[in-house]
Amino acid sequence: IAVAVAAKMMAKPAGVNRLLYEEYFIAGLLHDIGKVIFMTFFTEHYDKLLGVLQKSEKSLEVLEKEKTGLNHCEIGEYMAIQWKLPPILQKIIKNHHIMTPIDGEESQHGITVLADIAAHRAGFGEIFVGKSEDALQYPSALLECTKLTKEQVLEIEEKLPEELEKAKILLTL
Image (tube, rainbow, N blue to C red; front, side, top):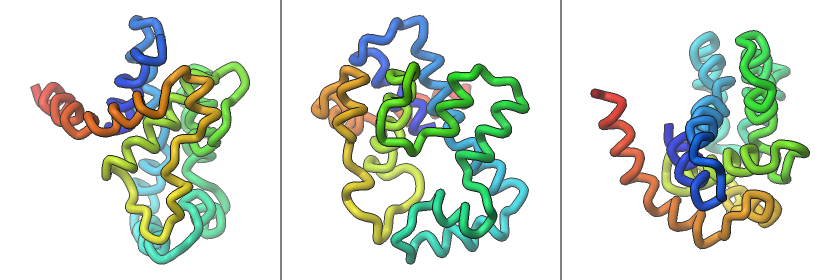
């Protein structure tokens, strides 16, 4: 839920209407739903793939595509369509590794991608062994389209572990 919490945290300084904060949270929560499908139905194969990821220069989505013919973004989009999720969520799930703005969805897509990067940089998610530092940089095009500064995003990244602990406490009530 780290990406969900980070996305909600980014919504306020980005000038998002506070009535929409939960939509940003949900986009962050569901962006990697394709991984859940992989892990649930192809557990052994996906565990092996994650082991290969640790030694590879390739991204997870490239390895998934090579090994299965689909990646978690495509599987997630398919499930989002089947579940009749709103088109914006379908688009974000499909494109959450696109580091440039998506026409018509700049703010929510951009914040989801920035939140994903922040969560990884804060130590949540896959380990980026052997990955280039560029993979963990905040793309200026996304900062611009979300109206966030790098300083704001770095501050959110720093506060994320504490905010995540608060969210975990609320989820256990």
